[in-house]
Image (spheres, rainbow over the protein chains, first blue to last red):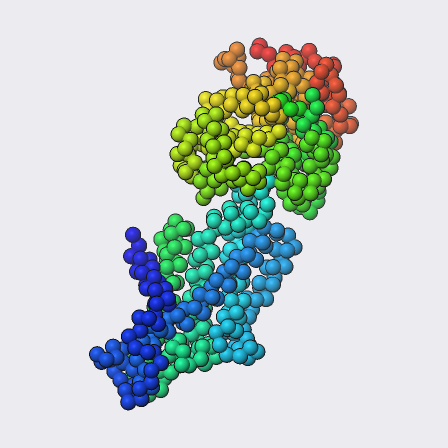
Length: 268
Length: 331
């Protein structure tokens, strides 16, 4: 039994639980302002202390799980599904189609995700929608490149030819037979996409271009905690950053472990 | 008997280093319902290429000339829908290596019933009943349990039985068997060939057996075609190929088999290397290895001629028939 993988899996289950039930778990209203209780250190009333407006930090962190995790999750779903589709079509059809897709992906590779996200915000305004779509597009080539290589290898295996001989359509073979044989690769790549998107979205939210206050997003909280640091209480930025780091670490480590297990070797 | 499968002057060219080279050089062969025809030849003779051409799964970029007709319909003129119907109901293929040709992550039950359910519209319950009956017919023990097992849990022989059951399940008119028993031990081989033969006679199937085993072809098939360098060198009743070969290549092949009567003596070999169609020189492709070759053999390519009930692509068949006959016999 792989201890690190188990710990990561437990952390991810807890995070998913928080994303779903966070708002109801919060002991207090995450947006209840109490200026008389601002900048408090952890006390029995506020287990993790309060922020500059006297809002309960624990409540804000728990309620913030959903907006913080929903963005990367959407990026992951969009980028993985589109990337895998493009990759499998490219590997299947081959020839000039494959070449055109490969060159288009190269062009996409050249565009940094954050830059694309800023552009989207500039055009469509702040909020979660524009950066999520921009990051999903920017992550497509990363998924597509890996999936294309395994799909191209799989496509040449005799069992695929045997299925063609049985009269199945390319679509049926790809969806029902090829994907189940390469889903681990797709899954590992999806997890990495989630981790990258988490970091990028946190940066976007930190800069105030994504989720807007007073929504308790972790990236937003890191930014809001800056003033508190000058006042000598670093709890808000620290705890919010810790949640981001733990999430990214758990997802990345688990994806490496699962990938290494599939290759049959020891994780590096 | 009308031919259910007709291969007429089939030519296949493959792109090799940017140039098209012919891998099948005008192959003609017919198989009637209920008939078993073998195609024998060395590696690279084009026999597997022919099987792939029949079912239209050639490598990308191949050029095809001539025709493959299934019940008088040209396979290469079929649209996508017709082709899919042809493959899922008209013809079934049994491959040499069942482990490589079955999806490793799907259960045996899925593998057997998928075509029936998705392509032939059979209800899942009926499909299950049908494949269980077929698994019993091909002597698979505990068929109910097998349906839930995965390919890696079955032995090669068992998996080949499963593949034969899958081929029979669609009730095809033609079965294309590409070296179906080469990877199996001898007892399993004879059992499987018996099963195939029984089913052929019971269901009036046409069987096209691709093999390199002359004895197997003689045991199972009425007629045998001998391929060399992408051409058919000789075709005739399987018996006549053994006893009265018409072509020097067939005679040499027959002589190079181990025979009990020749116990203790060295096996005869055919000198030189087999040629693929791509390398074949002008004239008869067997000339470099043929002990009966004369200057005329190099001049032009011999066309198959009818010689007492069979075909032979040799200009000297009539001159050397007696010598050929003695060649294959135990000394």
